[in-house]
Length: 503
Image (cartoon, rainbow, N blue to C red; front, side, top):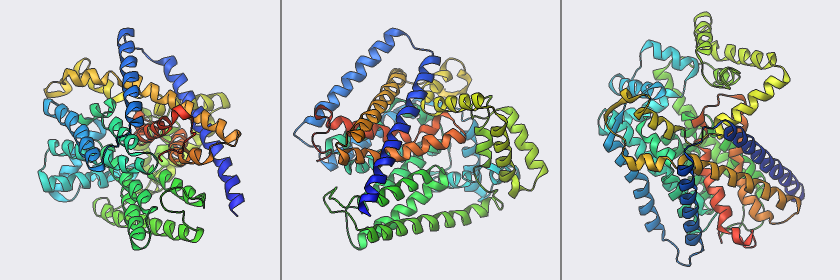
C-alpha cells in the first residue's frame, strides 16, 4: 500500500510542479510583453533595493541567534499595523464597486438585520456570500460603532491576524527566523498596504483561511483530545473562510491529498499518524467544516430567503467572456438581468451555467487557447493592481479622494510592487523546475514533498480561474503561499537542499 501511495505521490508532485511552473511562466511572458514599464531609473533602484532586502533576509536566515516567538509576534504586529494605520490616518477615499456594496449592506444588516429587496434578489442570484461578509462587518459595527473607518480598521486587524497566522503556519515548514521573514515580507508587501484604503473582503478571508490552516498543521503535531479539538476548530474556521470565498475548497482538497500521501516516516517532532488516524483527523475536520457551512447557511437564509445554486454558474459565464478574458462587462450584465427577469431566482445560476458552457463550445480551438492564455495573465501576471489604483486616485480620479492625501512614503514603497512581484514570480518558476529536476533524478524527496504540500492549493487556484472569473485580486490567497515557498527554498539555497529544511 505504501509503495503504491509513494509512486502516486511522485506522479502528483511532478504534475503539480510542472503545471505551476508552466502556468506562471505563461502569465509572466504575457504580462511582460504587454506591460507599460516604469522609468528605467525607478526600475533599477527598485531591483537593487529588493536584492538588498533579499541579501539581508539570507543573513538573518543563516544567523545563529533565533528570534523568539514572543518577539517575532510583537514585531509582526507592528509591521502589519503601522503602515496601514499611517495610510488610513492620512487619506480617505470613496468606496466604489464591491467595496460600496459591502459598506451599504453592512450598515443595513447592522441597523435592521436585513437588506433591500433589490439587494436580496442580486445576492440570491449570484452573490450568496455577501451577506456573510456584511454580517461580519455589521458585528464589528455593533461592537465599535457604525462607520467606514471601523470597517477599514477591522481589515487592518484581520490583516494583522493573517500575518501572525502565516508565521505559525510557516513554522511547520521552516526555522524560526525564516518563518518570521516570511510573515514580515507579507506584512510589508507594498500592494497589500495600498489595498488598505478599500473596505474589501480579502483581509477577513485571508485571516480565517490561514488561521484554519495554522490550526490544522498545529493539530498534526499533537495527540489526544487536543488533536481532535484542533481539527474541529480548524474545520470550523475553514468553513467560515469558505462561506466568504468559495476558493477555500481548493485548500480542503489539498488537505485531503496531504493526508492521503502523508508519509509513515518521521517528518516532524512527532511521528506520522497511521492511516486510520488520518481518516479520523480528516473526518473530524470535514464534519466541523460542513456543520459551519450549514449554520452560516441558516444565517444567510434570514437575510436572503432564496439563494440560487450551484454558486459557480455566473462565474463560469463571466469567466468564459472572450471580450474581457474572463472579467465583467456591460453585455454580461445585460444577460444576467434578462435571465433574472425570465427565470425563477433559484434557477438563475443553473441557466447561467448552461450559457457559460454554450459560450465555451462556441469557440474554436485557437480562440479557446487564447482565452485561457490571457486568463493566466489576468490572475497571476499582475502584482501591483492596488498600487496602480491608489496612484490613479491622485492622477486620473482625484475626486475619489474624500479627504487628506496619500503619504509620499507609501507611494514610494508602492513603486516596488511591480518588480517585487515579478521577482517573486520568476523565483517561483525556478523553484518549480528545480523541484522537477529533483523528482526526475529521484533526489531530495522529503524536501520536495514539503514544497509540494505548499504548492497544491496554488495549483488549484490556477486551475479554477482558467474556467471561472479571473480578476487580478483573485491571486490574493496565493501570494503569501508563494512567499512561503520562496523563503523555504531560500533557507537552504546555498546547500541546494543538502540539509533538511526547517531543521
